[in-house]
Image (cartoon, rainbow, N blue to C red; front, top):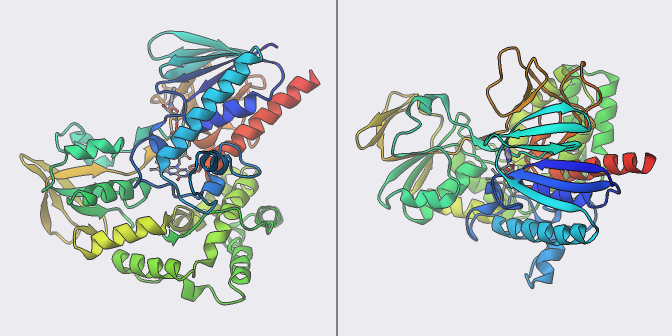
Amino acid sequence: MSRKVAVIGGGPAAVSTFLHLTRVRDIASVCFIAPNDIGCAPAFGSGGPMLLCNTSVDVTSLRPDGTSELLSYLAARGWPVHREDFVPRYLVTQYARESYLRHRAAAERDGVKVGHVRGRARSVSGHPGDYRIGLEDGTAVDATDVVFALGGAVPRLPASLRATATAPRLLTSPYPVRRLRAVPADAKVLVLGTKLSAIDAALTLCRAGRRTVMASPSGRLPAVRTRLCRDTAAGLGREWERQLADGADGAEAAAMARPLIRLIRTLSGGEPLRPRLSDHTDAHERLRHETQLAEAGQVPWQDTIAEVIDGLNHALPDQPEPVRRQVLATHRAAMSRYISSIPLDNARRLLSHLDAGLLTVADGCPERIDPHPDGWTVTWPDGRTEHIDWVVCATGFQVPALSVAPDGRLHIGEPAAPGARAAQVTPGLRVHRGPDHAQERMWAVGSAAGTRVPVVNYLRAAAQHARDVGRILDAEATAS
Ligand SMILES: Cc1cc2nc3c(=O)[nH]c(=O)nc-3n(C[C@H](O)[C@H](O)[C@H](O)COP(=O)(O)OP(=O)(O)OC[C@H]3O[C@@H](n4cnc5c(N)ncnc54)[C@H](O)[C@@H]3O)c2cc1C
């Protein structure tokens, strides 16, 4: 046994990597570098029973193939759970944590040393098979192989708030959601964002009676679904691969929708798709309509989503960057609404707050958000001004960028040094510093692979990467 693997990150992607590494033959040690307890990262870790996964148990597993491990884990503990269910996110944290502890004990019994250095990695220097990882406290960890499982760590702050980021009535992220308790019960709150973390914030705030306005450039809420399961195997990925190979131009990017629409029509017994999509422009009415469609079981598109994600992640990584960009630009709006749609239960909760007048979704984003001694003055695009007591940013997370300085050192999530260039992630998930470096022994899983793989904000994608990296290392161990 000779390899010393460092896994940078401590979320579910890191645990999934560990599970797959424990099957690799020549690993002597695995060292996690992460500021948090392994398995307990913020996205799944915070919140109570109300903060649901937006993916069904079927696809929310640290192992991407076969029966969902989360399903088996919950069933073994007496949860009356079905593969289609959307369970509270904290249960995923419990599952990831227990899985880590169990596999660590088994690995140690097999003679593998498992360690956890609490801290943040800042850089990687050295050569393939002989790396040194620098931490922000000045210490270092040596490794033969490095896996980046960094997730989306840093809240993305809108440009309009950067100058006032330390203002007292501003929360730069809704996580952990207990921070929202600082907002007084009679406060009027502006939540910036209309996607998953903004919905977490709105549900938490409205539940405690706070008047809440959600605002984003699109003014759109995600679509509504009753499940996200692996229910189709129509070969979309292979078909898209063929389409792109036949002529990767703008027309091909648009044509990629055709096999998907055919599949959805088949699922709905040949009926047209249009009546099953809402064309309301008002977010409140659209949510009402989409909730009704979901309640009536009229959401045939939902059974294609797992295959759509797998298909995009299969067909696009090998394409040149301009083609990847073109395809994503063509389909971004639809991907964002339907891939990240919300569970019916959350849609009903949002709708009840909207109907009660406690929650509103603005048409667009404020033009200005200016601090005021008692809160904020918000100026809307129509010139109207409004007093707001608190602002909560729920505008997503930035993935720490991997950049290479002129001296060959790889930097993690720091502002790029002068002359630095972006590290490249290959379709095989290897992280390359550039042509002057030998074949690297560094890999990206989950969000860290997002410069190459189109849909990474999804545990199943991270688990697929972890499986693939495990296979590569195992094949190498067998060959040597
Ligand atoms: C609100 C919200 C809801 C979501 N719901 C779902 C869902 O229902 N289903 C689903 O499949 N996906 C969901 N996601 C996506 C989800 O984030 C990922 O599926 C999952 O968290 C991926 O795990 P991860 O380990 O890659 O990232 P994270 O869980 O973000 O973990 C990243 C880890 O890396 C560590 N880290 C970062 N930088 C460094 C560094 N420099 N040095 C050391 N450690 C570092 C962090 O501390 C953390 O431990 C959701 C995301 C959000 C934000």
